[in-house]
Length: 145
Image (cartoon, one colour):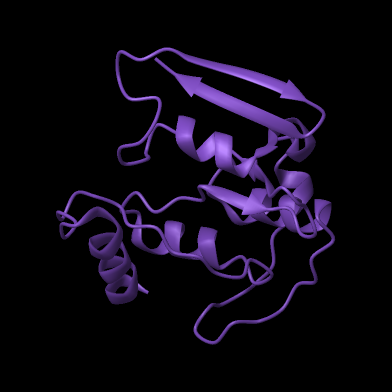
């Protein structure tokens, strides 16, 4: 994951990531692999968002605490089947142990949430800019000044 993620970062950004920069990677979450890596390495790895299957435009759950119970809660909310992943032990989490996180209250349009995210690189919403959003149904437009 690390090598592929670093190559993708360089291809997109034009420079290699520094040792302090996190690089994005996608994975399944039926085995709670994201929180597994976050707990195992404790290097800032976290869940940026979990895609809500079947949505168009793409929607996702954001601000998910990096622990197995909260990732399991999202998995159950989106009705994704639990499964194993080689090298990932115990793909179980107890969603009841994540009582402070409400998945439904954290679902957003992926495109808008990524542009506004605090850990994105470049793009709209940079420091000092003001953004306006207008929505009608699921169609949203965002402008930055």
